[in-house]
Length: 514
Image (tube, rainbow, N blue to C red; front, side):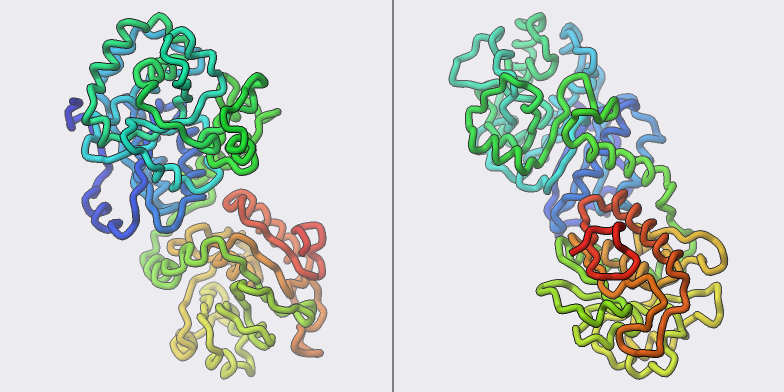
């Protein structure tokens, strides 16, 4: 048994566990050194982006050498989405069991740490181990919840079944890939786990050409349950692969959950001819910018954090996977017909449209001119933006109270300081970008939108849909440029969200049309 003194866990762990009892825990482990830490961070981001809202991940990072800087970067991911990150320092004597095994050039000794998981974390029933050269494309929960029966592990058939030949085990057993392994710790505790490993490694270490994977199959070929190809799809780079289950294989090709970049060429080397390499690189850039706080900056202003937590936290991923319509007041809104089952978010006087709004955003006091009672009495959830930089734009707090509206603070783009789109609305000022539609769009993303339809978002000085003599005095080209910035923000932070425009003037060619 590996002593608990080697488990290094971040602070206040007990409090976090108590707070998260309402969500089902998904335990996931990685093994990495400092060089691979950034790639592990990219994989974690791909998991969190796709995770079901009723689940919470506990990530276990296995390493004897990871720096405090990299630990801090991993911990920042807790700001991105609720999760826990634990750091485990395995006993270095554990890898001595494998010291005589020849490693492939692109394989690190840390990969053997995965086999210490049942010894280090015996109180868990199961844990999912993942390599750092994968990208997660769908919710990982069904994989974690796979039925394990009496098997000690679950894994995916490897593309190269010829690798099992040196070990001479019966033909009815297949050879598995070790990049994705679901450990049935509860069952492993009832087996002679370490005895098997020590005996087989001593007998066959010189036969292991694929390092830990050969060892895994040699020791446990009869203890592994086969999973669907979709949970570790790497087979397309092997032209000779002949799947045992062709129906599952082709279904998995159409919708993989995990894509595995096996072999020495990784997406951080080149994206040429590597399927889904762009998705991995997108998550890598996301992780590095997020962890380094280039885009993401937590405010020290307690008043703003307190206000925004109250205003926005209840809506984080509340409508995950839903369609949203951003209904603005441009003339093209006049011809819009309702999209069934979509959530409607309006701005300013778009409440005059015949379609009932679910949410309303107002952030310029001039929008209240001769219109107070309509806004006060309208029945929907309301958000009022407070612009502290320009006095004549600031909505009085008593107006928010009378409207039963939540408030938020804008940034100061109107004073010449560039706006930034907010990623965590509960802690950041909302990016102004000279138009309330961008505040509404930041909220829509935060609330979990799958598709966003832009309606009435005309970049022109034509009269609004509700009046002949009321029109915008904003610079259309500047607003168009801000929509381009918004598109870049979505592509970087929310690559799976689709933005579609419906007839808005000036946006042609920026977003796909519906």
